[in-house]
Length: 153
Image (tube, rainbow, N blue to C red):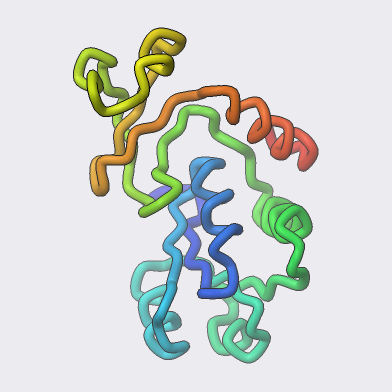
């Protein structure tokens, strides 16, 4: 069993789910599902339910966190503080589907990623589930800056 918390974010928290994945945390995004189904899934999988629905948070207690703010930075800070989280720059989770990422040789990505990315970067990662490819491009500095503002890395 992993020592890291695993999360389930309800439909109102898609951006939070994405950022937790960027930080390396296994986070399901429970979109287009009813409260009972979300609750059952989170409980069966031992996930902390993150929700803006106070009643749903109460039903899921103690494995829940009622998210107080609509602001993504405040949401991240609340979860980071509540669970003492740290960012993992290893790029281990797909931001789209939560799948695990594998390091992928750039030779396998010819015609898949832009030529400039292949020329300018050495590390590439591909999602085992959906196939999305990642690399630490110029956007990575913006990601690190946001996470640095939270003092999580």
